[in-house]
Image (cartoon, rainbow, N blue to C red):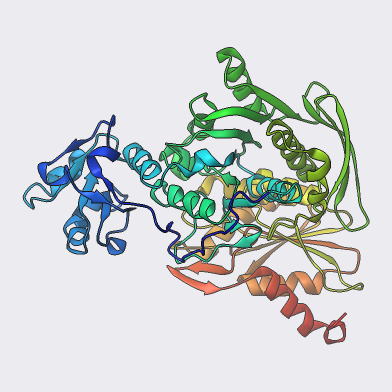
Amino acid sequence: MNSTDNPTPINRALRPVGLPARPLNELCAGLDVTLSPGALQALVGDVELDSRAAGPGTLYIALPGTRTHGARFAAQAVAHGAVAVLTDPVGAGLVSGEKLPLAVAPDPRHAMAVIAARLFGHPAREMLMIGLTGTNGKTTTAFLVEAALAAAGHRVGTIGTIGFRLGGQPLPSARTTITTPESSDLHALFAVMRQGGADAVVMEASSVALAQKRVDGLRFDIAAFTNLGRDHLDFHKTQEAYFEAKATLFTAAMCRQAVINTDDPWGRILAGRAGRAGRPPFVSTGFDPARNYRVLAWRPTPGGGEHIEMDAAGRPLSFDIALPGRYNVANAATCVAILDRAGIDLDAALPGLARAQVPGRMQHVDLGPQAPRVYVDFAHTPQAVESALAALPGRRIVVLGAGGDRDRAKREPMGRVAAEHADVVIVTDDNPRSEDPAAIRAQVLAGAQGHRGVQVLDGQDRQHALELALAMAQPGDALAVLGKGHEKTQEIEGVLHPFDDVAVITQLWGRMHPESKGH
């Protein structure tokens, strides 16, 4: 059901229209923020982290970065029209001689989030807010929930790894998308979605975003935990710190209800904490008979998805999803629990799951009846590689690599897991970024080699590896192309080169089998 009869047109800056500027001292009320005399009466109409995007009425946020401090660009932001600069004490020291209108906070990220929520009118309070976190399954579960809510008559905004969507359509954006935007952009995006008629938002909350307080100022109606594997240790350093970042979403201050996959050992720890604290109230999902929302049985459908039978808190359910594999069945169970706890009519919502397609998530690339079954997936952790390959029947060929400038310790385990679950492993380049691609491949190859009966090859560059895999694959084989999923580019030495796995696979197959065109 659309909550706005005449949605406001969307602008590419993803900023709401028609909202009044607010005095900075009013926006900072109750926060640990010290305002200089020049900032007290500043009228703020926008919040920006990028000094180049600052304009008249902007509050520029100057945060410490990995290479430099944003305060070094404060004068530039003010020259562009920024009315004040929010920073930390270190940043204030860096601009002490410039007499800029300052707002100084010991925790500027938290202050930014609260200020943005206030400035844009707390739009999240007017919509059903669903937050998803976990190593794997966030994007798929988000698309499943979006499809189900839409089937039940809701207009849904979606925020995550694949980008921003409203009403099932991509939102035009001039901004670079990351899984969870900075709070200055996030609350503005909520306002844009609200003005565009949304009455529900489904968003992914990454561990980095939670650690950086990007979702501060929000309270989700429902927060869901999918699982926890190895990832982002380049940022968090330890698995325990990675978990603790995820766990911040599951406090009474951050969510009203929780849905937790307690088949996952970290999920059981999370549920134990919530149980001991008595809040937030939570339900469990999984395959174990003790779960509140449990999968009873599932079987493949002719179209390549799964038919699922569930016990949903005592109610028997039977429905289809368009995605294959046990792990997508687990994602569907999480989706059902979210919908039910949100009070959504399941009879109206569940038919939407059969139509939910997720770009780059076990995406079937149809090459014709005499071709192998080819799937493109975003799997880039050992756990995700195992789940993707376990979903495939027949002889399995896998093409995979590991990203550069990221957690190096997961590379050998990715290769090992691939060799344990495939017949042919072709190691290639993912996004090498600033690293030597051959050195990354060598680490993945080291994990894959030495498994009896498994052919392991260095596929070198990605196009060559795909060509090699397609030449080897026979009808009835399953070819999994892992790592990049929905991405349309490949990052090498700071340059983004066009590269779309689905498009390249289709082009290569057409060149190798011209008789298959227009199958």
